[in-house]
Length: 381
Image: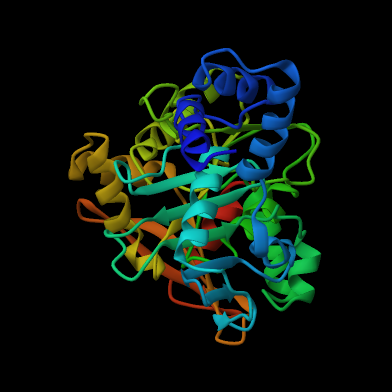
């Protein structure tokens, strides 16, 4: 099939805003050929288009490796991966930059997005739970840039994390008390530190009689719990339609008779609805948040809440009432993910601060605050 025809079909299908079916490919092919193609020609074209528009090509073995978290293409002969051993160069190569560009465009189409000279970058989710980011020249000055982040289902329970060295047995018991006491908590850390994995493990210790509603940008959370309802946001298509935001999903979750509302990652204005929900009787909620330390949480929440129109004083007032505990994770240079600090939120004058209650297995200055929270709810430590 001619390259210009493939490009025209890709352009037409990009308006759908999701993965396309064979029937939609056939309709797009007939439309671009004026409707004169025979059924046999159309069937052959659909097969060719499916090969053109699907698959990750030479990157497939890397993406299927359970130890790979990121695949980064910075040039035809520069394909990198990130995993337990850090970032390293692989022997995978492409024919030229045009081959990288074609792969990036193919993946963008699978995600229902457009990637061409008029729209030279894309940030989207692939159906397999892979986050796609791509940028074309001349915006990417050294050639097509392609980044794929593999979001694997978080399947470890607390016992497995203990065996991996994330925490010790005494800390595991403390975490279970925090969950059972229905303390609302944030899990913080850098990218790849294990926030989602720990969140899923903790949700597995929620009593089976409680109804848990999880809101995510991608379906990472698969807690071992009988009453989990998973809601996944949706980006807009190339025409700007069809978006379903995390903020809207938090609103909908409030109407679904939740016992606990969980947000996979707070990264925008949805923090406003989450804080409102946690302040209206929905104890035991949780979310993850990118932060370098627990002490930075109030500032991070201020920045996110400002996107939803909440003033600084109002944010601190709601935060103090909504969130009790911060669990902070770090990933060591050797790849081991560890729980390094547990902080307690408290008010000093008109502002919320996070005080350390536990560090690396040992109680610290704010331990009495955490102990009081647990004791007041019937789970003394």
